[in-house]
Each structure stands twice: as C-alpha cells, then as structure tokens.
Length: 191
Image (cartoon, rainbow, N blue to C red):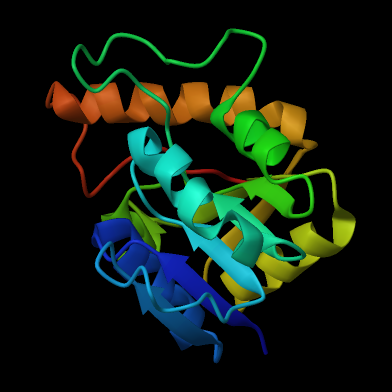
C-alpha cells in the first residue's frame, strides 16, 4: 500500500484522500497552517490552487525530492476565467517539473470535480482519472491508488499531454461556472 501526503485540505484534497483511504492506502492531509509538519508520503498530491504552487515549492521543495508529485492544478486566470496563464507550449505540470528536477511529477485529477471523485461516478459512468507522466513506475503507482479506490485510471500519455488535460479541465470549470454543467457532473469516459 502507498502512503500519500496531500497538501491542501479543500474539497479536492479531501476527495482524493477518501479515494486513497477507500483503497487501503494511508494519507497525511496537510493544510496551509501545517508548514512545520514535514511531508511523510512517498506520493505527494499538490491539491492547492495554481497561484500558490510557487510558495508551496519554495517551502517544501527539498521535502519533495525523490517523491512522486501529483499536480492537480488547472492554471486558469481566476480573475477573468477566460484563459490559461501558462505559455501555449507548456503546462503547469511542466513548470512544476522544471522546479522539482529530483521529483517524478505527473498530471492527474484536474479533469474531475471533487464531487465526482467522492461519488465515484459521472452520471452513469465510473469516474476516470487521466494520468500524464514520463515515468512508468510513477504512473503505475498512481493508477494503482486510483483503481484500488474504485475509480478508473487511463494513461493519457507523457507529461507533454498535461497541456491538453489542463485545457480540458479549464473547459469543464468554465462550463460549470457558467451553469452549463453541474459541479457534481462533468466529463465521463468510456474506454
């Protein structure tokens, strides 16, 4: 079984913790006030808004060396909700990977809402977590955590696919913010 540290105690952090716990994994859930508590998990989930990622890396970068680091962010412009704030040829995950060269960074969970993670379904479909990473072992580890918690995991390709996953997450968020889809709904996948 894996031991996860989830940085962020919001809806997504709690939903991912519940999925991992359901699968028999252990979870350390750390909030913004827990800066003196060291990271203990071998898998670390960055369940914080994109604008604070740089602060998290500045505070905990050394603790993340050698770990699998899961980026769940959607780097959208939170003031306008009309664009992503990373360059068109990059992604939040690529930027994080560049700042954490001793970590195995992957992109996952950003195309699902907390409610669909918690429910385990999107409409009649089992919730699917798309995973993009260059490291096969990291991908296998996260896929095992996801599937043991009752969800589906799909290999979305290398970390370069994070850009497309972030665009898909951005679309889903803007649709929900405009009341065109429910925050308890979203995109489902049939494999």
